[in-house]
Image (cartoon, rainbow, N blue to C red; front, side, top):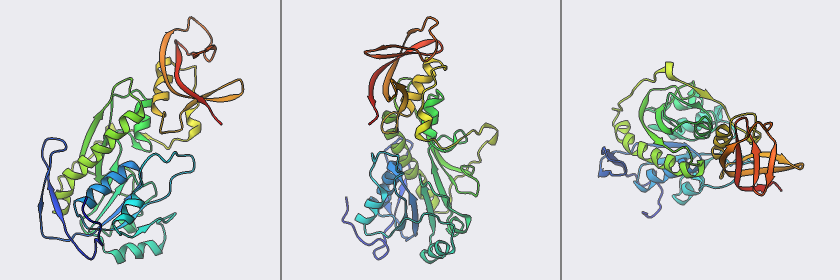
Length: 316
């Protein structure tokens, strides 16, 4: 890692030359000092910001926010990384005020990047970037617009998710795509196994796209809205297991909200049982869905088969 320094006072810029092979890029020095405002959060935001800073892109400000109260703090934060590089950090609860419109105008951004930033970015802000504003979304658009796309993809039994860098618009996740990458996964994989690959895919997409964007010549592709789907925000309560569904559907829920997320759960003897890992067992043989068939291990009847716990805990 290069020695941290004040990015605005010592401008330097390198543009990546994208290669068709993943994770194989060369960088060359180029004249220029395009000013980037970075809006980001989470492990994907932190890793993308790390790429920009370690390759000496001119990030002049970072906007982020705190972790939600119900979230486990399982990822490194963009805030800490920005402070390590002496970059101003802002955490406004909302951007929809004249104060922040003026702040962004004062920062004179050439480019705005939003990487897993959860708050709404008004047009009065994102329209100020001379080279445009781009959002990194955690799905292979136009599928799975909205919130928690990786979790929803697993829960719905998909075999892939993805990341897409697209033009920011007033409507969510609808803009032209500049670059995207699929992230395949298997039917037995858990969210914690897939998430690191999503983060790496986001970095790869940013590597490929940043050069064309800064040169003012991104290759934009319109989304096919006829293939679009949308899913909303998830809460911990959405992890409640419905045993009237198939064992496969229950298993998909368990692996889709497992660690580091709050987990799928049910009640046993009045206590909340969180199921982190499970497997699909034999036929339930007509037992009513939700019937507890054994406690060592916990085995529950679903609408067709049995779901058997492999890793669990009772909530404190």
